[in-house]
Length: 578
Image 1 (cartoon, helix red, strand yellow):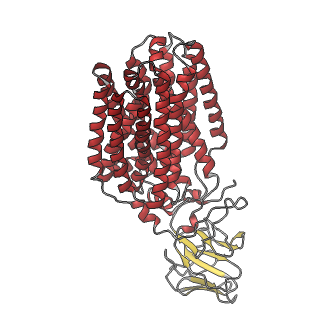
Image 2: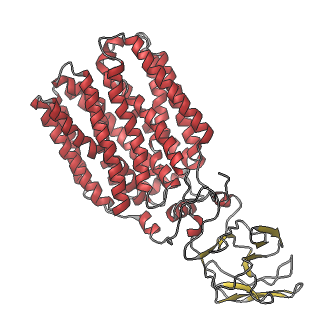
Image 3: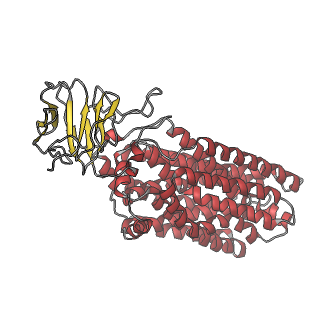
């Protein structure tokens, strides 16, 4: 080791795991520092009244946390003396000297755990709630036109295929835009992406309001296209929001709640338009009233996102998230994409997810045509059946997320839910012919529970299979697959329903889900994120109202981490005012 130039300290090396021995002496002050028990560094002349740590300048002491003092010091690579909460510059020589805890008589072990970098913040529920509301408003606008398709065909004097494209445009624009949006998500963060999504959603809703005139179908379509582009920024965020803000024991539930918000919007989109715009009323006036209400809500949500939404917490919520941030630093977006496409289990999930969710998109878009072909004049019933489909799915999403957090059984749950989605689709297909609409309600609930419950399951399973790749990238690819299959399935099923009968269209989806079920059985369970979490020390706790942003107090250990990083790397570990 070399000799320090600032204070003359001959630096003893303490390596990354804190186990190298040796000693160092400052000739100017006649004070010696040495390793005790190969881990603790103690000031001999002060009779252990202070604790000294000496590290090379090639390393950085990011954080020090002691049980009873609970003081966190970050970015001290220029050298400093830390006494309680006071930090004073001391030296800028080759070694860094850190003094912590004025009364360290007790033996305190020092390790390299990242547990001291993890914390849960109560504001995470606010972030999740805001995201859910924006997602809900966007999903509402996706299905808002299709559920009153027969009314719009007469109002705009267009064909059914034109009305179907008001839904399919959501799927079409997603495919080419998902790659730049996921790149932006990883580079700019949740807040920028959330603002862009909410802004496009708001702008599109006002265009749709202006286009509620019989000869302005192109303007209405333009507004729907803006909302569809906004969806690209929103749809892939649940897994990313969950992993950024929530701990390992609640991340699946948080992801499910994120999907829950989207599905609530779909549910409202099924039930409200048929009630607000009946076919025998003043269609133009009723459409204006419906769309101005939608626009007002999206405007209020945009203001909230601008005012209070945050990109990420001061400290990551889990070891897996911390490790993911470190392992992907400096890695290009192209490298992440290439890595994902080399992951065979993920590729199988990519296809099977697309088949399942694409089937849901198709049945949702064409529900009006499918039900009315068997039950003419049942426009309001179409909305209620759609509501049943989605409400049951919302329950399924939450149950699935809760089940995953409790069992960690990703592959088994995925296969089971896929099989039951197939069973639900088969039952739905053949109960339509019975002529009993209340039977259709019951089977629709079964179908929705499992088919929609698969949405958060796919996101979380992908995050496990692809760790430490960013969650936004994997979920974005899953959604791109779903949109692709959704367009194909909607077009094919639409032709079959309108040119042949509803039975043929539903059988097409049954066969597709059977293929997806078989492929799902071959997905290998490689739970990489869970493996990382098992290495984390217990004792991550949630902050209280008066300690937000303060250092976490581990229950059992004190922690030090040495790592060669630069100033920008430490930005995510600094304290933040709530």
